[in-house]
Amino acid sequence: MQAANESIRGQIIKSISGHRVFGRQETVFINQGSQHGVRQGDVFSVNRKSPGIVESGGGPIYTTDASRWNRMASASDSDYLMPEEKVGKMMVYKVFDQLSMAIILHSTKPLRLQDSVTTP
Image (tube, rainbow, N blue to C red; front, side):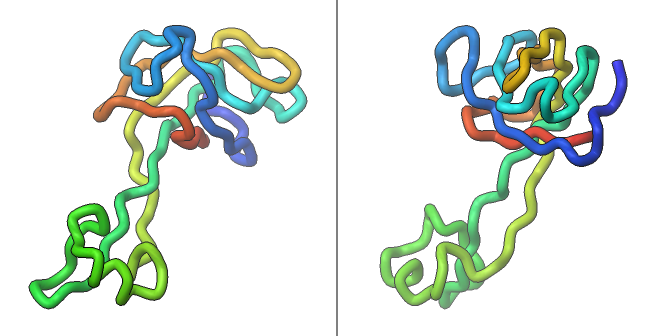
């Protein structure tokens, strides 16, 4: 096992189970392969963008919990630029040209399709 190349950034595109949400010990496909520099044994962090926050009369609240008025009053989906949070780790065990198969080693939340994968 080794950390993946720093320039590699991809996404989870499918799971073997066919579900949209998955966890530890499940196999997923990522949209990066040998042509992108992925190698067998590479370890990736799984990240997810934190939920958006808008300012309301009572202080900041999540966009999903905000009233329609507060969401419309905001110029974009969120008043704040939210960082990505790490939600898991995976290791690649099979590499193809354009995609790879990885097993989820650890997750703090259920992982989803379209979660991003980067170097740890």
